[in-house]
Image (cartoon, rainbow, N blue to C red; front, top):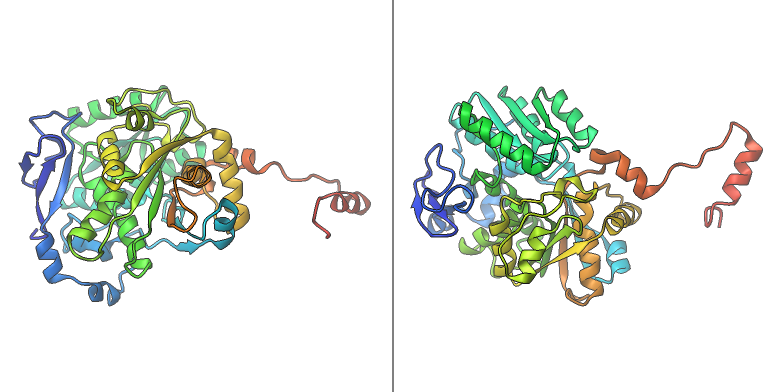
Length: 417
C-alpha cells in the first residue's frame, strides 16, 4: 500500500514492514514494544483533498480509507460503521458552564459502541489475511463489536470476557454466534487466557494493545469530527479511558490530519477514568510508570486495572497539552441522567464518564467556558440497563384506579405547572 510507509515502535523507534503477523517490536517485547502505523503524508496530501471527501458518498469509516491501513479493494465488514451524529448540545452546555459543546454519539454504531470502528478494521485485515478465526479479550464492547462485524463476513470468533461483563453485552455476543469464554476473574485474567489461546492456535489477534491496526480504526472518530465541523478543530476533546486505545486513536486522528495538511492546529485532549480504576491518571500526574489497579467501578467498559495501551494513552494527552481526571461512580450515574435529560442521548456508564469528567474540568477552570469542546459518548445505555435504572430510578407504579392516578400526577413536582 503506497499510503503506509511502515510500522514503528513507540519506545525505541525501530521500524518494521507492515506485513501480516507483525504486531509488536522484537527489541522491546510485546508489553512495551507497541507499534504505530506511519503513513506517507506527502502521498496522501497529493492524492486526496477536502473536495475528495465532500464528493464521497460512502458515509462510513471507509470514506477515510486514505488514512487507513487496509486494501481499498479488499473485503470489508458489511455493517455500516461510523458517521455517527455530532450534536450541538446548547442546553447541556449552559448547565455545565460552556458556550459551545458538541456530543459525539458513537452509541449509534451497529453494535452500539465506538469499538465498532476498531473491530471493522480488524476484521478487514483478518479477511485480507484469510484468517479463519479472530479472537480477543474484552470487558464487553470490543467483544460484541468484533462478533457482529465478523459475523457479517462469516468469520468465526472466540472471545474472552470477565465474569462481570453485563448480560446485555454477553447476549449480543451469543446472538452474533461468538464462542464466548466467561473467565471468572478480572479483565487482566481474561486477557492472559486469550493471549495464551491465540499463541497456541495461531488465531488472528484483535487485542487492541497488541494489534497496531485497532488504533487506526478508532482514530476515524476524530477525523469524522473534523469533517463534520467543516475541518475546524475544537479546543478540547474529551474521552473516557480504559485500556487507552480509544484516546490514543482519537489523538492520532488529529495528528494524521495535521501532517497531511487537512487541519492547521491540534486540540488538547482530556482523558477521564473512574476513581475505582484509574492507573493511567495516576501515572500521568505522578510521572511514574503504570502500576496495576483494582477494577472497582460500575463502568465496566473502562474497568481495566492493567491497561494494555497505557503508554499511547499517556503520550497522546502529554503531546496535546491536555490532562487526566477521575470521576466517582455517583458522578457517572449523574452524568447519565444529565445527558439524557438535556440531550436525549442514552449513554452507558463508561460512555458518559467523559461528560462527568468534562463537568469537573469546567468547574475547576481547567477548560474555559469560551473554549469549544467535543465530548464523546462511547457506548449506548441499553448495553447496561441495570445501571441505567440505578441512575434514573424506577417508574411510578399505580393500580388501575383513576382516582389514585390523579393523586399521583398531582404530586409529581412540576408536572402540571
